[in-house]
Image 1 (cartoon, rainbow, N blue to C red):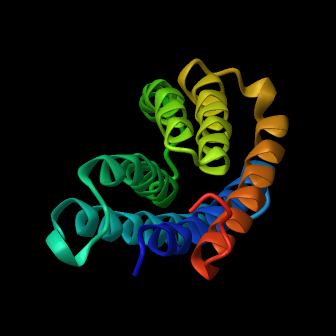
Image 2 (tube, one colour; image 1 turned 30 degrees about the vertical axis):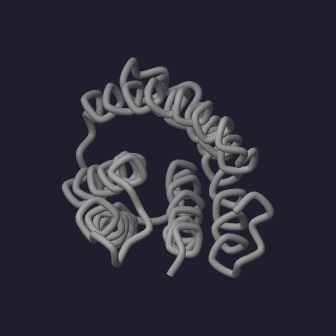
Length: 174
């Protein structure tokens, strides 16, 4: 499997979990249901990252690719655990999100330099999303929850569509 087909498979599920999380932020769905999907997607991404980091010749991934996927993996595992526990105080997770933002911005630039305009754009869209989560959770600007929820769902649709194109072999920058 190529780097893009594996990444695409993961991003299809990231898209789904973002849509579900956006709807959940709008008050639709239970914490436990959201916890299941977030945990499964976080686990899938963890497996992809481990394969890329330690898979040797069997994997086209690099530790850099693995590190980027781990940002997502930890995000969804953390959301899953917090949702399962119905954790109300998510400030620590919010602060994690702003650190991810600071990593996602230059990652987008590096990917842009490699010629993948689409994936670079996704990194920047995700950076805005993680910054929004920091705003909502880290510094508790809950008055922005509704627009952040809608943005989360829209980012999920874009991410899932991009992942599908990658997995199917139609990503134009691969």
